[in-house]
Length: 323
Ligand SMILES: NC(=O)c1ccc[n+]([C@@H]2O[C@H](COP(=O)([O-])OP(=O)(O)OC[C@H]3O[C@@H](n4cnc5c(N)ncnc54)[C@H](O)[C@@H]3O)[C@@H](O)[C@H]2O)c1
Image: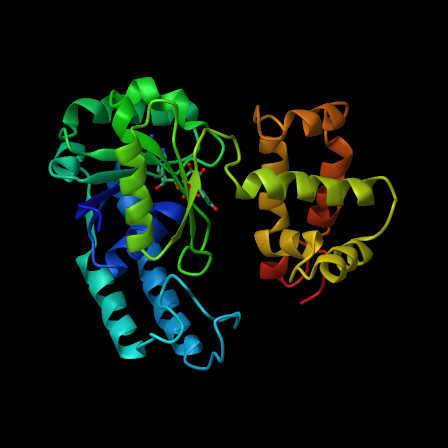
């Protein structure tokens, strides 16, 4: 068991609210630090929604016949050890136990772990880490959930190189329960090990990323894969349905790239394409050589065509496929 008890999540957006709710669900004492009253007004409805989401998921899990059932949420319970009443009680306790705090010094005064999950803006994160540094107790571990900014770009601002690293979640963490734990060059082994343990304690599957890599594990694989799929369509090589079939039938994977686009949402995917092509070190040196002649305009245009027709993905009823 890690010795983490008190957790502070900085930022109550999509991911911050999920991380806070999940940690509280697993019995941790959790505070969300927010910068303004306005942020409270935006975060509280997210927590209300998460409570309903967990309770609905628990109901749906009752009918699951195996852990491979699409309704099974590994972040909520293990198959074979599922007690719906206990899970509902944990959900209620998480919801009522979560604290929202505007005073940063007060929020972190006795924190064992601070999880930074603020908007993906380099300058704002840097300013936050600088403001946080003098307020943190000696013992506190600090992690960033940043998807595309390397943790080392903030090491100096944190002022605690040995106790600072990345802990990166996937969206819908109660279901897609992976946590990529990534060290930067100065992270102490003990900090890394403690964060690995903590990730397990909040029912994530901890995945070690022993040295800094843009895109961690998942996006290092996924982004070039999705780029390649768009490239095949952009160049008229084939159509989304055939490409998905090639991937699914050829590898046994449950979803093809265009089905993944529909789940992620085409607008988000388009933003990701835009952002990731600029992330240095995302692709391996060899892939980079192969991809550099492109500026991804044509690939992005494939997404833009569907977006322009209002086909934004599964959530809107149609994307590359109709639902
Ligand atoms: N959305 C995802 O699928 C996802 C997945 C993994 C990791 N992440 C990472 O998580 C982090 C947050 O992403 P998100 O999707 O939750 O974003 P979001 O836009 O939903 O939430 C951002 C939060 O940060 C707060 N914030 C912004 N600027 C701030 C400042 N200067 N001071 C204090 N608070 C500030 C906002 O009020 C909001 O609560 C990012 O680093 C992102 O890369 C996101």
